[in-house]
Amino acid sequence: MTPMKIKQLAVVIPVKDNFQGLQKTLEVLWEETAISEHVEIAVVDAGTCPETSHWLLLQDHRIEHIRSAKDNGVYDAMNYGKNTVNAPWIWFLGAGDTPNQETLCSVLDSIKTWDAQQLQIHGVALEDPESGVPAHYPARWDSSMIWRNTTHHQGVIYPAEQLKAHAFNVEHSILADYGLHLSLFQQGIEAQLHPKTICKVEAGGVSRRFNANLYCEEWKVKKSVLQGPTKWVHPLWLLVKYVFKKSGWPVRA
Image (cartoon, one colour):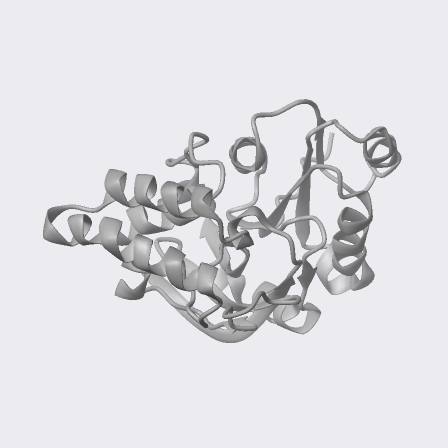
């Protein structure tokens, strides 16, 4: 039996009730042979849409990993996906996110030269950004993350070995990715920043609903990660952010 060739990049896509969005994302990945031949795909389907589950069964010849089953939310699906793939690098996309083919081809050309101890961070564009939210987030990995969620997971390509040593905290149903990034930053994990935009993020994500639940969870994340006096400034900071968001002032999340 010929051993399976391990591809360089795994793309993990959690999906729930967004069949058309899933098709849109996968078609972009499949459109370019230079991408499809070098990307390992895992789709983790919550199993709530029979149309999605049936369609996925018909695509098992070009999707390496498919699970259609009840899960405990998007971060539970992401934990499952990261642990099931074989590639040395992992990238998460949401159903409906649109990869930038030019940037992705460049990634696949250079990925073997990357430092496997560093996160690889690209910029992301937001589709239909909410009031006060920028349309583009450049690659960042700095102290700004202590105050705001400035690094979207769709912009991060993770070294698989490093990522599999951690887990997204499923108790945080909105900001577990932010919690992981903040924890890694506090641990001194380094990142390489790339100037190009790697994808457009579809509107409607739970972290873009600027309600009280979001800011309460942001405090839970920061309380579990931050230390010292900075930690205790955040309840007031989050209250100010929430009030300004509700008032319609252009304040970033």
